[in-house]
Length: 56
Image (cartoon, rainbow, N blue to C red):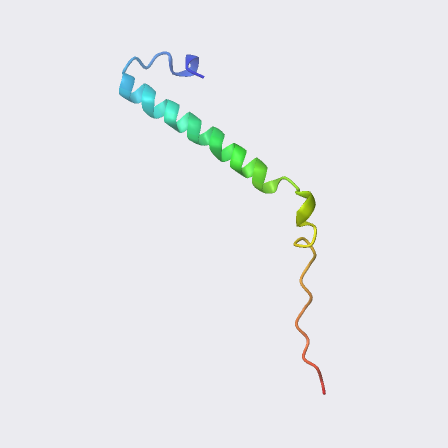
């Protein structure tokens, strides 16, 4: 992870790039967890029935 930013010797820029890298990894983890199918979500995945008005 640090080898990519080896040309940057300034600690501030290296810190910013490491923070951005960490944020990107956390974002990928969040998206992967959000889109992963969960076993207890099956009742939420059913399509909603269209609203029908009773004629009576």
